[in-house]
Image 1: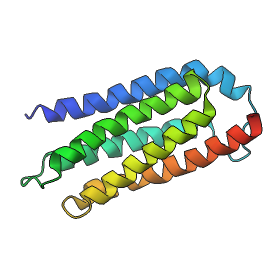
Image 2: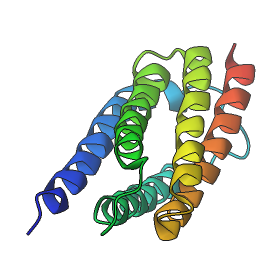
Image 3: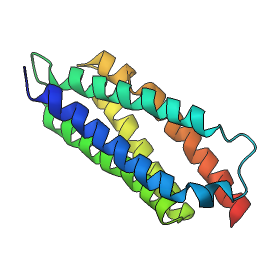
Length: 154
């Protein structure tokens, strides 16, 4: 068995765990704030992130295990890693530090990395790209929600 079948899922689990840990610390603050009327329930958000992490893990594995590696192979690998760090960074800024304005700006970078991954993988690993569409849509929606949250609580 290839080591990437262990390391990539472990990386995804690490990102999910760190984000969840930081989020849980800030939940009392979040739920005591003015929430947007369209804010989904915590259970729905958890389900969405579970699906997103699963799809992103499969996307990265499909990308990494191509028979012929494209010229941008390592760049995409690093972009996945940067994306994971930005994902945790958002939880740190929004929930742990409660810096909503900074978190929104950070989310724009997070969204940019997801879109960049989708574009960079499209020609050589179409399914890897498609598996990230939900992630891009969710981050865009979450950024909108964070902005509304910021307006309601500034």
